[in-house]
Length: 195
Image (cartoon, rainbow, N blue to C red; front, top):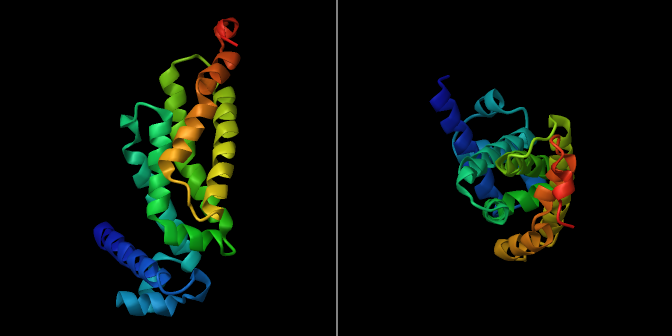
């Protein structure tokens, strides 16, 4: 099967799942429901995915990858974070269904996959020499904090507007990423931190 055909089939299965989610929860949807709606046989589904959660994982990974493609253009961390929240909100029905099902950790992994490279990009922009392990430590610290906030936002049905969430985050974080990097700096710039 060609790559383009495989991608088209996967997208069709994704569209069917998302359509079905508008009518019933994830745990009530069967592979049969998806293949019937999509107009393919079960073997086609199993050719691409081992089960519905594998399909969900693929959708979330694809969406996270797509969401990150344009982030190099963002001037500020809060703009990039707002855009990420808007992407999550655009997938609201799927994300809420997955979050409320047995595979909540899939949503966490989806958010980590979006946040890790985003934080790395903003850290690299600061151009402060920091050992790689310290850089990853800083990324992980902020990533886990942000994921916790986003999960709470999801738990509350994403009621707060992404722009408001991003503005609050900006207020909290103003200058913190740079200060954290300076504290771990390998060229002795830590003494220049303006406390």
